[in-house]
Image 1: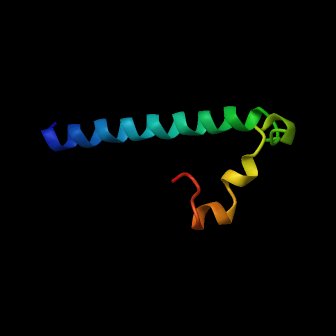
Image 2: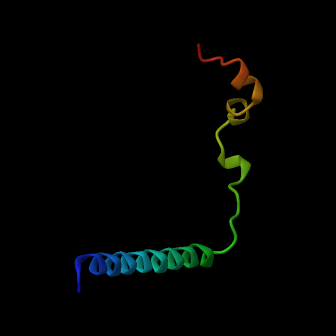
Image 3: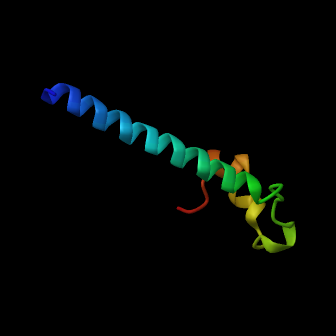
Length: 62
C-alpha cells in the first residue's frame, strides 16, 4: 500500500469519527428537552439599556 492510500484511509477514518461524534453530541443536546429562556427576573437591572439601539448610535461610555 503506497503512502497516498494510507493517508486517504487515515483521513477518512478521522472524518467518520468526527461525524459520529458530532451526531452523538447533537443527540445528547437534543435529549435534554426544550430550550426554555431564562426568566426576566434573573437578568440584571438595566440590561435593556445595554442592548438598546440608542446606545449603539450614541455610546454613553465616553
